[in-house]
Image (tube, rainbow, N blue to C red):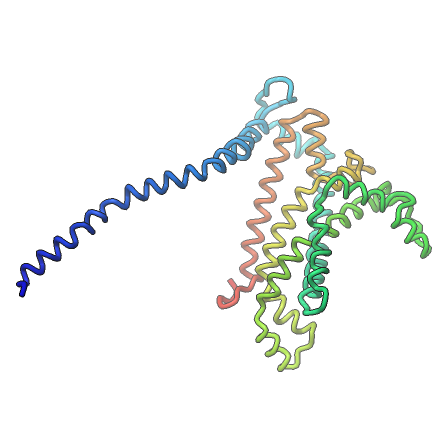
Length: 323
């Protein structure tokens, strides 16, 4: 029989290959990292050339006077000073955009949540209705859809005739300052399909045991919604809220088409991005437009951070309590 010393020696010889292999993983890891970077290179090149590079160029242009034809001329903070202290239309665009966001985002989320609750019921034809309600989001805020929308709310349009049949004569809503922005808001709310699908996924995750317990306690449908459904879908609500706020600040096509590219009538549809477009591509003030873009980026970032910080008080995560 082998002695203890022989067994230990045999063990050391058996472990020697493993020790050799243990020294190889760093090289293998570097090889794997190199292969990963090779596969990621198309994305990295695209991000550098199409995202990071243009962003840095825009940041530089925001401190210059640039008209797309002559070389940029460094002006420092003059664009920002002019924006905040001399440009009345800039502040008009800010007010219009805030009004648009404060009305369209809650309405869109409310409609999306209401339809999602209806579609969460097990009924015949639910799949068809889900597809039908999601279709507007697939179409998006395209120019063709905005043109149809302008026709619907224009003079002698379908909306005008329907309201006129019940004694409400509004005329062309897109040509009246008090109604024009409402048509843009209606177009945004109509595209509620994407948040609806996200809400529907969140509703599917609510445990049925909670509804059964609430029903045993005598809670009705409304009480069950506020005591069970709403707290359980608050993470999904936060996600949708952040996305929709960002999208509302970036809205452009609907306002451009309905306002005939000028933000009319009387600047009632002059959204921030539309005014940015006018400054950059109509007036060829690309430096000023770049400064506007960076202000918008900072504002959206601040709002997003505030939403996430406030979520600790109203977003509920199952198993963790309130954050």
